[in-house]
Amino acid sequence: MTDATDPHAIAVLIPALNEEAAIREVVSSVLAICPNVIVVDDGSTDATVERIADLPVTLIRHEKPRGKGEALRAGFRKALAMGFPAVVTMDGDGQHVAADVPRLLAAARQHPGHIVLGARVLNRHRQPAYRRRANNFGDWGIGWAIGQAVIDTQSGQRYYPRAALELADIDTEGFVFESEILIEANWQRGLRIAAVPIESRYHGEFRASHFRSVPDFMKITCRVIGKIVRRGFLLGNYRRARRDTPLLVDPQGVSADAGHSDQPGGVPG
Image 1 (cartoon, rainbow, N blue to C red):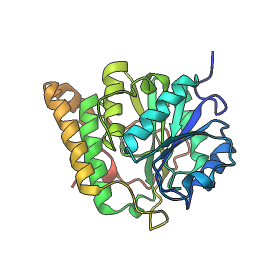
Image 2: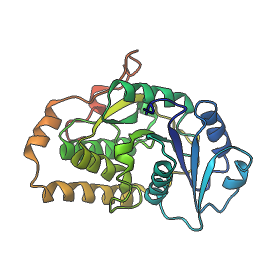
Image 3: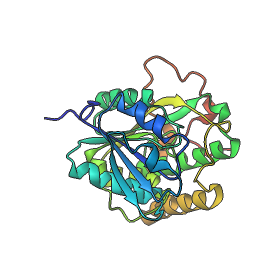
Image 4: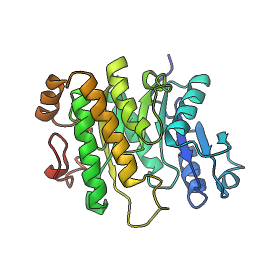
C-alpha cells in the first residue's frame, strides 16, 4: 500500500498566477524534498512558465485566469489521474517554505483521516490586523460548520488526503473553494482538521496578494453561513467548536508566541 505521507509518494501542488519573481525558487526547494511537483499556471501574463521550463514538473496551463479554486481543482484531478494518494498545496509567491512540507506529512501520519493546515501562528504580529481578524472570523464559521475548533482555515499550505482530492468537483470557485472543501470533506467523508504551526511571512516580501480582502471575504462568509443555516444551524457543532481547542500538532512547542486571543472558538474582536 502506498504511504500517503511519504514525500516521494505524494505530490506538491502549486497554483501560480504571475509568480515570475519567486516561482523558480519555490519549485526548486520543493523538488529537493519531493520529486512530484504539479504547477498549475492560471493564465499568467509574465514569465512564470519560462522560469520553470527546465525543471522536472508536471505543468498545467490555463489560457486565461480562472481563479484559485479552479487551479486547485485542476491540480487535484491531475494528482488523482497520476495515482497520488495525497497532495500538499503551496502558494507560488514564496510565502510558504518547502521545509514545512515534511512537518505537515508527519502530522498527517500522526493523525490519519485529517486535512492538515499550515497555521500561520508563528510571529503572527507580522500579519496585517485586518487579515488576522478576517481569518479568525473564518475559523469561527468553519469550526461551527464542522463542530471542531480550528485555526487558520485561510492558509494555502495544506495536506489533503485522497478522500479530500476526490471532492474536486464541489460547486464553488475562487478562494471560497479552500473554505468549502474543509466543510464538505467533513460532511461527506468524515475528515477532521489538524494544524502545524508555520511562520507568518509578510512585510512586503511578496507580490501583492490576489486575495481581495472585502469581496473575497464576503463571499467566503456568505457561503459558510449559508451552509450552516441550510443545515439547521448545527447548534451541537457550535457548542463543540466553542468548547474545544484546535488540534495543533506542535511537539516542540514552537507556537508558544501564538497568543490566546488568536485562538479560534469565539467571535474575534
